[in-house]
Length: 493
Image 1 (cartoon, rainbow, N blue to C red):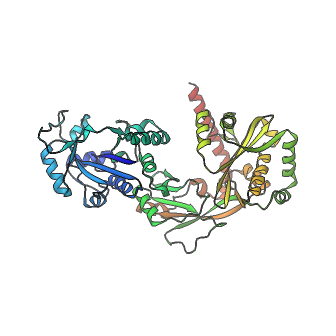
Image 2 (cartoon, helix red, strand yellow):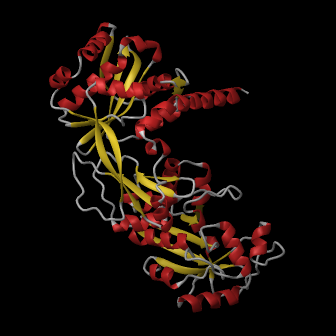
Image 3 (cartoon, rainbow, N blue to C red):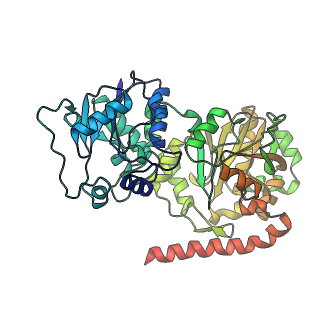
């Protein structure tokens, strides 16, 4: 299946404002000239799919030598995006690139700012001579990928894009919207959709990229599931994405890192951890009080079993989420989620085992076990508050231990220890202990190096010593409850 792209390079920089200023003044500033175009070209070149890209350049976005090295003639064709003068611009582009042109398109300037940029003072498209040597590319059917991505989710965009390619449509994109969203012209980021279609950058697929106050940090969204050591290729791609710092943990129960580079910043982290041999051994190691709680759940009529993540189970989770807006003295983030969203998340999470606690066929609690390499995580554990007296959570943890022991899962993780006193006690009572880990922060840019030097890379709650953190927890709970109640109040109005 041939994937064809029409790429309109009408902004020279990732920033629209800087593109406008530099284009209007006729200058180049900074080392990120045509940056997104170069990323897009790299993705096309690395794709195992059959791809053909038609690049339409304006007089103000002439490709430099670096981009031309990406635009091999096998997969890329240079074409003209006419702004004002068809002949002059064609000659300039052919001279700059050393390529013979075949196609053209006409650059639209409906907005006032665009007319100012291109000195097209009156909204009027350039007149194309009848004997013009180039062929209009407007005759081919296209699908506006960045336009579609504005109003649709990544899943919807991926599905629609695949259908359009099968129908022979050419995907129409603008490099400037590769990662950002344009509200005025209704264009959305299409990177994830195109990345999946081209089957590239799979090492970035599971990354979580977060913008802090003045720096950007990336990490694996499921960093505890597998051993991670950042490669030079990954660092290069993150630099393309303007990521300043990459962080990861050393999974010392699985693999240790010897002689890490000196510029990697080491900090302490921890997880709640347990080694599982068999269920009976675990039952003997936990205290008598916890064993009594497990028996109490059984006597209260609670039955626990592994569950297929179907629509009925999703509805039970949805009811549990929306039972109360306040849990464990804090605002509950899942309160108010729709049944459709819960069902979608349930179906899209891979490598999971779900355990449900039932009272007369009604779901009253559940655990989500996420399986990784040499580890399973208790990702979610939640029960109905109306049944708090039935020790539902103790029964759920016991079943999770039994399931992992049966499946020969040796290690189980249950979040961290140190941020929630009562939950920390619950973890310890169920056999989990605090395992100290090393977290690494790898600076990628100058901004990242400065951030790490100043010690600003960690979240405030992780930077505070325990002696200061615990006294502040009640204040944090109060703020969380107040935010939730305010949101609900405003929603009612």
